[in-house]
View 1: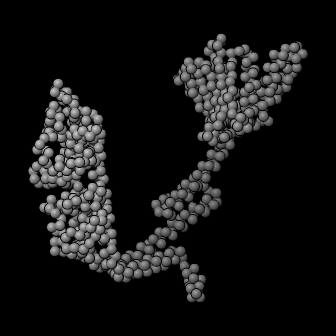
View 2: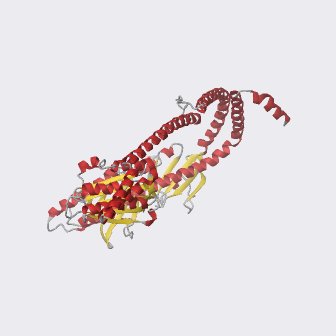
View 3: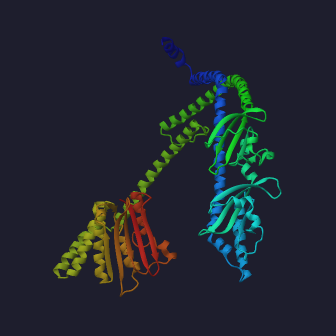
Length: 575
């Protein structure tokens, strides 16, 4: 322990960061590398043997999934045609009375089947065999269900299937490459009216395992052991038991040792849900040779890596520390409140990302300082505009009190009520110079304004309130509702006899509060909506601007109107 402590205090702590990184990285790279070479030499054969079995099982499982997926896709195509009511109607229709009817039928047959063949290029052909003697057969898509067909392997495989799918292997007419046929009995209420066959070429099945068969032999065999698909096409339709002894157990998967073409081999197999087996055969020598070559390569690469590691570690330590020093220099500039930092790119690794994030942070801080300063100026200007718009309310309030006294002395209570309502209106709007009051106060202020206007318009204003009590204590920007009601009165009345209805609503919408002023007046043409957004007094745009300054850009005013129907203005504020 004393030696380690002396080494750290006297030597290691005094050298530069670059040399420290070089020493640490060198030992971290070299010691595991030498240990790995030694360990690999001892265990590579055993590990490779186990891995070979695991890879074979994985490969078979993947091929199994792909094969089942492909066969399921073809099964779904057959189910679509099986459930096609139009196809069934055309197949069972009686065409003896009017042979011209079959033209529509063939147009549907051709469109449907060509669409299937176009979207599924792996299908070689698709045919429907029909018993309907009145329907002409084109011997391409529609063929006769005759005695010759009933002797075929396809027809015999459908005995007692009642609409279930069967996969049948058979030779093509050319006698060359075998074809896999999906066969399905088309029946309706247990009445068979046709047989659907979908022919799939062997090459479509082999493509699922073509890439896997480079260093091994893979076969797909049916339940009887006949080879359905193989890399060696000469083995197709031959029985696999002729080449490998039958050790396939009743289990769905397994493995065993055997001889194939005079070589010792590993054999692994898997079984699909359709009863087919996928068999993989790999010679011992194919992976044992790789084990020997891998050991030799590991020794060569290890020696080369020792040299390259020393060179690369030294270079990396220089690059690493150089960028760290540059980043530290920029940090010290920001520490001195110099936020105009424009760092050069430090790459795309963690240090580069750190430099990018630091540069972005410095610019963001600078931008936020500017935005906060500007926002405060805008807020002060908005508050000043509100105060200026109140037309010296102190003087006006005192004057109104005098007018009210004169009205009482002269017995004119109508004028007294108007003046009293106007005084109460300005008392609330003054609000000690504050820009925010409660929704209850804002609605009360609006009521006083409406009371004054109802005296003027005498029965033409019909105002309805729908206010949730839970929103009344919540804050709102002063003079938000009253200008909207003023717009209704000044611009919406189009009939001096009928007047208008005004509805004022306030309710919660999730985490927000929504206030609406709705009228059934004349409405606004769509081409005038933008200009109307700025109209009258403070205007809708002014209200929207003040709400955004107070509560943020997620809130504000929205405007809806339709000519001849009416106008609705909505205010959204946080709850």
